[in-house]
Image 1 (cartoon, rainbow, N blue to C red):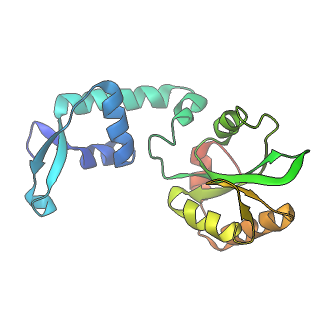
Image 2: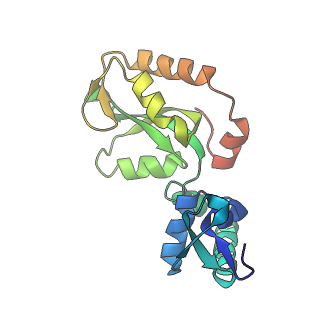
Amino acid sequence: MNDDRISVIEAAQAVGYGKQGVFKLLNRLGIETFKERSADHNGQAIAYISLDYFRLLQSDVASRQGATTDDLELDGDSLGLDYGVFYLIKLEPTHDPGRFKVGFATNINERLRTHRCSAPFSQVAKTWPCKRLWERTAIDCVTATCEQLHTEVFRTDDLVGVITTCDNFFAIMPSLVDAEDSTGDSAK
C-alpha cells in the first residue's frame, strides 16, 4: 500500500462495512475514488481514496455509531450490513389474510414503516436472524407452494404452514445470536 492512499476494500474492512456500503458513504460525502492497477490483486484496477479522505470516512462512521440505534439502522440496508432478520409481513391481515411479503432487513421497524406507505394495515408475523446472503434462498424455499404476486409478495391458503416452513429453514441454518444482537431486533 502506498503511504498516502488506502484501497476502498481495506477502508471497508477497517470501518466494518461492506465495500458497496463504503462506496455509498463516499458518494454521500462527495469523495471520489481513483483507480490504480495493483499487483496484490493480479493487476486489476482497484479503487483507492487518500488517507485524508479515509480519516473523513472514519469520522463519519464514528459519528453514525454515536447516533441512536434507530438512526444507524435506518440506512443499514444501504450500507451493506451483512446481518439482520428475514421477515414475513402480513400485508392485509383482515381483507386478504393469505397475502404476505418476505425479505431481509437490518431494521424491521423501519422496513415495516416503509411498507405501511402502500399497505397501511401491514403487520409483522415473525422474524428470524438472517444473513443477507441467505435471503434469496430463504424466499425460494419458503414460498415454493405459494402464488407469486410481485417480486417478494405472495399469496397462500396456509400462512401458518409458510411460517412453519420458515421456522424449519432457519432451524437448520447456523446460529446467528451475535448477529441478532447487532441488529437491535430479535426474532418474534
